[in-house]
Image (cartoon, rainbow, N blue to C red; front, side):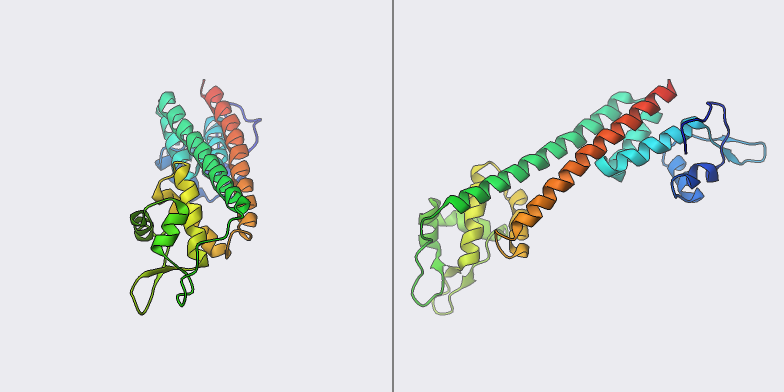
Length: 243
């Protein structure tokens, strides 16, 4: 829907829907959800919209790629209810989440660089086990064995059990995961934030293949940041339209 509408121009639901590839039912749903201001009604009960509704729709659709559907809907409801401060608070929270995601990515990359710079031999392999027991690994990392057991319960490491002794045995992948978890914990990250990152490393098959995932992560964050700028411009235009 173009911007050359006049304030008093009357639009049908189909007029709003057509320009954005939406159904007329979607337009009605957006109105009922408070994303669009309430429509006027003809004497026969048909909805009519104006350029104000067109601006609200443009703002909402522009906000969604950067802030998500739920936050964008809440922002538009707040604006339409005259609660600009609440709308700004929601937007600030969304920007703060993006910043937190950027910091998490930086922490992961820093941890990976630290691991790549480490040239010391890994923990000694226990003869016959094909891996290392919890004590030597804890000593190597400078942590307590109880910490590794906590990480196991949180899903950060998944050691197997020695069939003869029942002791935990950490293979090469577990050692890698423990070292990565150790770096992230030193950076102040909580276990619940580390667990999905460790899962990404496992899914990628190690640290090297993770580079592509990190590059994609950078791209997605940049896309979100630019989408937030686009959404801000459309929201500002809607504020002006509202007067």
